[in-house]
Image (tube, rainbow, N blue to C red):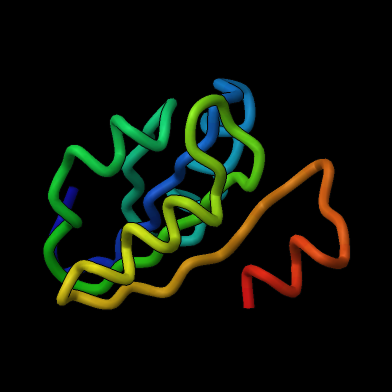
Length: 96
């Protein structure tokens, strides 16, 4: 991970999704960090430099919305992009 390059943090419980998205991120010239669970992600510090979080909405334990709420308590603000194979209009609205 290079601090001079933006980092996309991928939080998804599907290993194939994590790997595919990380490959796309690297092909676009960014760094990536991967986390298989929301708890694993929240236990770590945000990466230095520019970053955003690509967050699955439906995971075991905490939902993407739960993670977004936890991130709001962090003094460092990072953009969150939600990803879901099971999205609904109410869920999308809550994410905004």
